[in-house]
Length: 470
Image 1: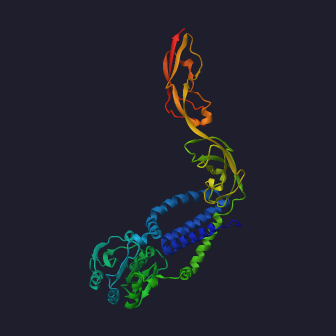
Image 2: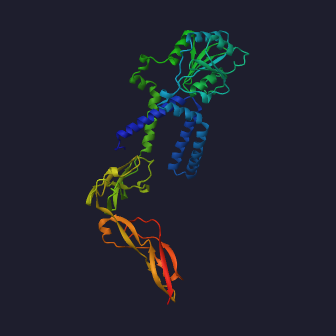
Image 3: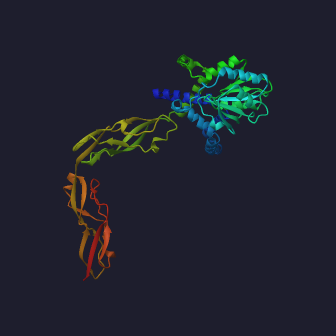
């Protein structure tokens, strides 16, 4: 079915599979992914109704899709901005680099389990590589060194800052009493309250690590990438936080390609199959080879030369279209643009190559009916020619023309030498004598005698007509 399967197609499928899987892994537990799935269903319904000839339904879905696209940009602007930030290749060089050097993780872990024993609720967010400013609301700035006394006093019931989350950024307590976005996942157990939903919500939208202490049950959890992990001891919490916040060692950063490739294998295979099916639908062939007529144009002609003649003026091109996203070749403005930078005086035979055609992606040249264009080149010269006023009609009765002069009387022209050798005069636009009633001055433009000749006088010449009675 696909006899023209190219290496570029394999790269196309692999790149799109990587991008789609990254988006899925980032937003798999967020409402953004649920909306995308819904839009995908509407898109599939639109394709089905259009192919079945259901004009009203397909038209409504098409118009609805345009409106929804704009609404999605407005509603999910934070998610879109975060996704673009994650795709940035320079964020690791110029982005914010987290540091846990000022935070004693073992002391912090002991403090967390002390809060859990006292059943004091706590919500602590560790910012890692991705900025969290878009998701934090109503925070109180502290910029303090972390300590067990500070955390105990913040989350102690009845203090002004106990309600909300604490943000630890670059090893310092940056904000307190922050409001976080709540998770919309339906898989969260009912007994989890707002604190757990807030911790999961910020972890779904970023790479933050969130420590949660339950006020009702006195247990400790770690929210990471939209998943909640139960922590049973300070040592276990210390181990988790150290692996997440400490700079990676050389050994830890060396993850084999095999491990990266085969981790989460089933979601990756599902993504690859989805992209492959979409690619097959998009790149379904549009039938046989189509023939279009392309005019021949030229560029890079040296300044001292002039093009006097070319043959042929157009060429028939056989095109093959590989994608349904590309319009029909008959609707494209296809031109053969030949390079004249190496031509010489006389007859030149230029090869017409596939590279002389600018084609959109998904369109290739299958054949040409002519492979050579013949051009005749002459030396370009300049010459001063006399301006001759061209008149039509007759003067009204009783008048005669005493003199007819053009100002300037000569103009400079530029063109091929063999053409200018045969020229002595240039004519103006017509001057209708039947409309003249007295001596007057009119303006007329000088006309080029041939397409290969350029008049180097842009302004109209003044034609002075002097009349007299008979």
